[in-house]
Amino acid sequence: MNLNMKEFKEELKSGNIRPLYVFYGEEGYLREYYLSELKKQVVGDMMPEFNLTVINHAPEFNELSDVVESYPAMNDRRLVIVRDFDVLSANADFSEKTEKLFADMPEHCVLVFVYGNIEYKPDKRRKLYKVMEKHGAAVNFAKASRTDLISWIKRRFLASDKDISNETADFLLFYCGEIMQQLIPEIEKISSYARKREITRADIETVATRNVSSAVFDAANAVAEKKYAKALSVLEELEARNEKPIPVLALIAQQFRRLYATKLIMERGGGKNEVMELLDMKSDYPARLAITAARSVKKENICRAIELSARADAQLKFGGGWEVLSQLIASISAEEKR
Image (cartoon, one colour):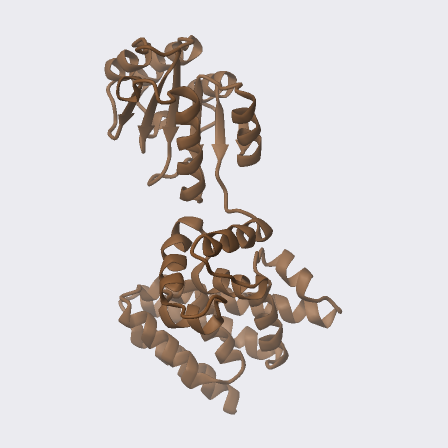
């Protein structure tokens, strides 16, 4: 069975805990938080050193079987956590033995496979997957919604005696990204730096580390608004941070396509909400920027920028470096002057 975070939260609250879980998803903060909550439910404070086992390597079957079948000490249950082991891609012998183990899990054990540094991409045709689906649940800790993120950001700042408006929190999501795990140190830096109780956009821009996507978004929009010096400045910033040019170019091309989509939405009378929905934006700040930039550029110029980006991609793959991206901006500028 597949569960989202809220469904797992309700399951945890009810005390109806399954013997087998897979934890995966982008949001590491939520994944670790609810793993901690599960630990409280299963192990509690009673001799946790004897009733909790964490495996940080690919276990042999006998090792896994031994810890799963071991009885808890002075407790009803024990918790076994296996980190970054893709159990569903294990060899045939391991899988066959594990199928039997998972189909008859001991009542005293809760086993959790945590996919943190590896991707969870199960082959649903495999018998082991079907056994795990029948007897356990895979919990997806996806990125939180914009509303939940803003509420969470406000609570984090309030814990440091700071306030932040919804609009500024929205800017923080654009500037630093939407992953809680990455936002926590940025919020701490901003809270320590800010002199006044109310957090400002200037506070964020002064000390926070800008997300690559945010920087590229600004560069592409600057190109659309014919602010080529600003676009080049952003590229220089990314190069100085040792970012790789190929993924940066991919994001630039993606942003040009988003500008084209925004232009089409505006032509048929759509607005910010439609842009956010179509382009999967949680923050409305980039949607407003995209609309402003789209007003400044013709559709044919965006199409040409997309074509030039494809050429630049080929140049990069044949050994070019950051100079290819600078040449891309220069080429788009030259096209505009024709």
